[in-house]
Amino acid sequence: MQANEPTEPEGETTRLLSSLASGDRPAQERLLELVHQELQGMARAALNRERGDHTLQATALVHEAWMKLVGQDQVNWQGRSHFLGVASIAMRRVLVDHARGKNRLKRGGGMGREELKTSIVDPHSEGASDLDILALHEGLNALAAYSERASRVVELRFFGGVSEPEAAEILGVSRATVTRDWQAAHAWLTNWMDGGKAQ
Image (tube, rainbow, N blue to C red; front, side, top):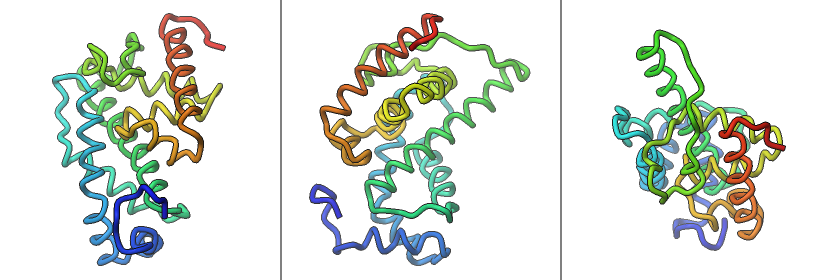
């Protein structure tokens, strides 16, 4: 267990995570109790960066992400940080699926690429709440081909709502590395959204 993880009985989260794949219902319920507050915070952070007309609520996002997490039987959970990192991926998938469904209803199935705002790399910037989740998803997928870690940093910060130190812990790198990846992602995504082929 990491030194800066919340206090809890030694190894309880890790033990419960190992029971997740076996469908141990009491273990799943206890695990949810331990991480629920963090998942709610992640969901609120992700939804705060969405457009104002978003119809998905934080509780529903947590529920859908949780269903994806407990259904994973191929993951070798390595502790709380690993779990929260995977939770950020699950939330991204839920938000993208939700946006695609909404887009199909609005556009009859067409999905044109909308401008990707620079606010994606600064969650506190003006306009961050006008983020187009599908454009972000597309941009992160393109970025991952060049730098998977930089793409993960943006994913963790935006979909997981984690700080730079937390992202560093989840990824197993230094905070300075996360800062560099964050800056590189900004440059790459700015070029990408301007229509250039970022290198």
